[in-house]
View (cartoon, rainbow, N blue to C red):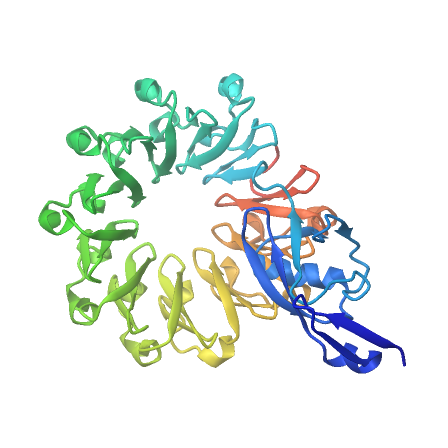
Length: 505
């Protein structure tokens, strides 16, 4: 047998007979994206680089086009690790599709695509922003980001100026504040019907439906500077300032009025989360302050005893909150039938909860063991009687309005909830083996795999049937976006494939 030598970066080597070495040697390498994000993985010398690309893409949540050696050479994917000369502790660069310059955005009924030159192409429901012809001159170049309400878009350009179109009553018309949107806007946030922009000084500019937060005149003095983040409910906003205070405006029944807890929101707020109708603020000492609709998360008094143990993170669905405490257990409040109560399976939620995901009216907790515990409305995926071990080895979870889909650590999937909303994945399980990520409409899923292919399932009318475009989705897709009723996939060539309702570009 030939003798092979694999040298570590410290100069040490191991000399073994070739067949034995190929069976037992594992090399640890790092894969780095140009953004700086990286992943470490163990590979065998006999593995093909195409397999390494798949592994790394799964860990990094992207589709990798090429692996690049430290010398700058592109490594042929048909080669094995050994043939490519990869050594223990090598660092390889990964080339991915240029998602920084090619982005696709959506609202409830329309898509907006930003190409490499920063030009915008729109399609879908014209009244929701699918027709941007009247703003075409301002959308020909330099757009870097787009934010959407349910029926309007706002594009941010390189110079920080803002261009809006779509439903005028939901933010598509910003003419009355346009003089404040000419430059220097740092970011934009939207609720269902209004926008709020933060400028370079931390000042806030709002437009859209006045009763939903498009008019912030009452609190404008407090929004002149120092705002670092804005969180929306369906029809109100809460601004977190650099000094840890909170300012609210918009629909008072949806959290726009925080007068009853003003003193508690004057200092030390660390983060804010929201249902459609209420806010919850986590303070630096681990305590929680809530306001808004008391039936839908604005009153946490029933969970007060458990919340005194200290909160690590807060999660929300449309009508309830769930908090992971510092001891990794869970406390809930809001609509009790929709996840605001977890008494039935509290025993399974008393430890080791790592993350929480939601449909519109249910929660799914992912434990460190990879098991999943659900609660809330059963028809929304809150199957309290489900066996957590049957949903084990889970890496992450995605959702439609009424169904969950868990991606397992081996790249497969497990779905539950309303079958009409994507909760039955039995027909496509054999097609999914290496899922990078999943996107959803209101009632369908589309999975992007590490080989660049796409698989869809769920309500055919909302994108669950992609059979008409199946050949185009077989490879080279690097990004998926969705409206409430349709999907759009961007390929590495820059072409766009669409399916579902009202999707023709």
